[in-house]
Amino acid sequence: MARARRDPPFEEIARLVALVASMGVREIRLTGGEPLVRREFPRLAGMLTEIEDVAEVSVTTNGFLLDRDAEALVRAGVDRFNVSIDSLQRDRFYELTRRDALPQVLSGLERLAAFPEAHPIKINAVAIRGFTRTRCSRSPSSPAAIRTRSGSSSSCRSTPTTPGPRTRC
Image (cartoon, rainbow, N blue to C red; front, side, top):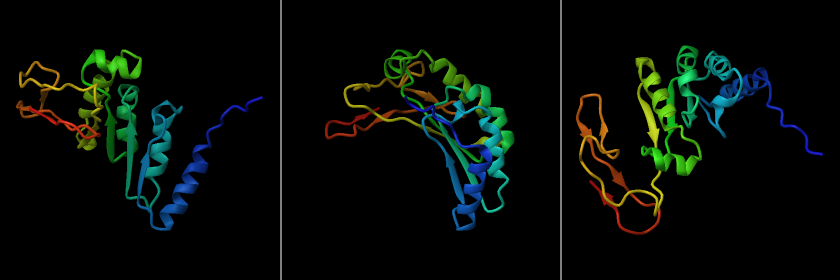
């Protein structure tokens, strides 16, 4: 019979982080399968930001629950956010993740962007050969054209992880 997985208590995690911080580790990245699914995750982040020897706490997330937790994480003192997005095209996002959650992820990013203390926000995307576009449009309405805060469009660049042609727009 398989045992149920039990996450370590927050106090145990904080004790371990305090120990490695006393040995010189200054930056803590909270990641994993998806850290925001952990019940009361912002409380853990807050406990870690309070450790004297820790200089930076960052969170890597798929953004699915970011709309719910963005404010609490910023208030807890998280210094940096990395959000992994599988695609900016809703149909491709669904094909990769098996959930129609792109609007929810984008909403979470908008929510996080409302807090200047959370900036810069790093967005991670990986080009997958045979799955990414081979041609991009510079049209502002194109999913490949991303609007910057200044209102200008940035171009897309897709660099395959395996040898082959590069796409540049």
